[in-house]
Length: 266
Image 1: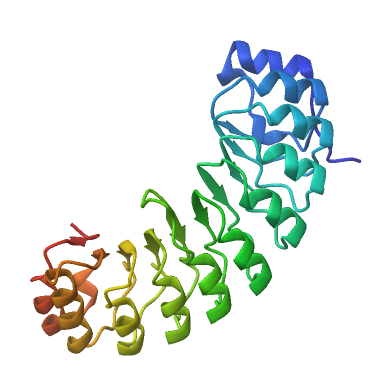
Image 2: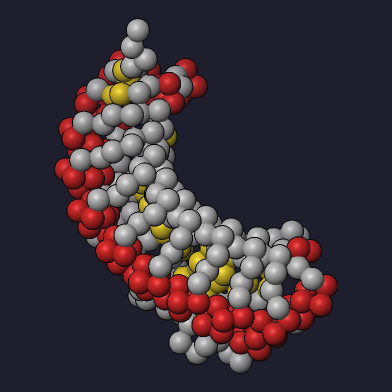
């Protein structure tokens, strides 16, 4: 017995008439004409889909809101090209990202691109994704090489961007240096420790990061805390978001002096 459940044009039109009447997550595949109908909507979650034709992807190229396709585990180059015209795209089901598709996404006009299913990426793919001008979610990455960090940390034209790397549990000094040129917010909530050498790479006049999310930190030396505070007081350096209750009292007391400190536990 097949588990395939098709989202037809009739079901799509029923959903458009009354969104509460249909659960789009139930459907594993979609008719091309149904995709054409649904492309008129704003935000759209179709995370149950495991297959998407190139024709359906072409219809979604007209979609201007957030498009969730987290059930897809693969994507053709042509479909990726079409989806690159959407407003925002979530493809957390992808566990591999061919470089040819990364190139399609790198020049897309997405506001947000979520690829949280990737547990690793090549340096080449990282270099290419670093050209993407939007908020990039890569929370599935477990490791980050210095070269990959340099690629992802490419400076932006302005600071309205975000790079989410919350799956990293350690940040080598070289990777910290590579990320330090990123213009925008960097989220590293998976880190429980930030070494003095990593802080030294971030705490320099060439650092372009506007804001760090470091909510998972439980270990930070007093020297590093002092460095971060003086860094901000000197007229450069990002604001910080961390949970001071998870840090040693002496470190938390030092960080209290940071003029742009946010406590995620407030």
